[in-house]
Image (cartoon, rainbow, N blue to C red; front, side, top):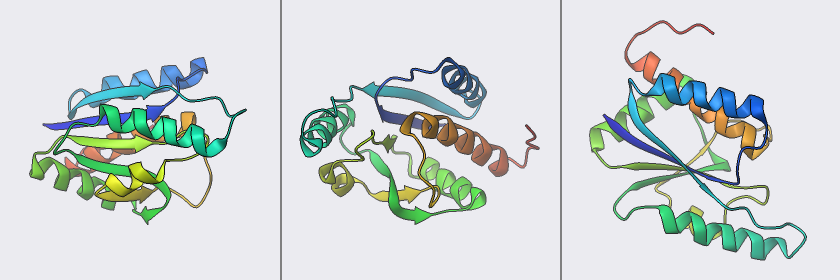
Length: 154
């Protein structure tokens, strides 16, 4: 079973997002060992580079050595849902713990991106990082359903 960690900057403030995230966390228990780790976001009223660097330090502080790190980055490569399913299967075969990293409002620190073994983008559109966490969980769930040939209807 894949050990999957989502490292995300900031807490989820909206109740509807918390409920959606909880629903997909529950659904994913049959497919993966999932953990969500929130690191603090830093005030944007200071220097944005400083905030990004501080968030980057917190992110790197929770990632375990010898893990597979994937940065969720607008400049990353785009995959279809089927390709993402196969990406998940490849990570499962490798047997490494996987860390999917979502940056905050100022994006990911270059040091985090540099440590990543892969960079993935889900769209050319820009999403709020809190909403993206829900989208990511839905795509992970969809990926496992695809891999197992199970029907998936929302």
